[in-house]
Length: 61
Image (cartoon, rainbow, N blue to C red):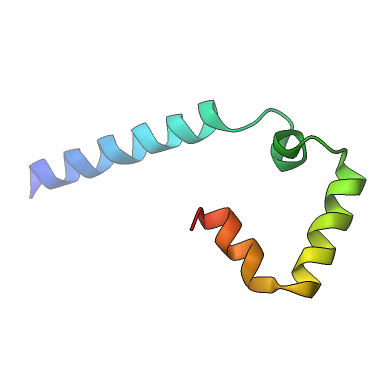
């Protein structure tokens, strides 16, 4: 049980480090190039047209 807890803590630490290091500076608008206003409008339009598309894009499926 103790080994499992240590492994779980290590996995959480590695994942939290990877998420902060690999995140795009400026968030999702910066990762996709347009400024925040344009990005928000595009995301809103896509969500209204096909909500499943955004879920698939974010999950990478």
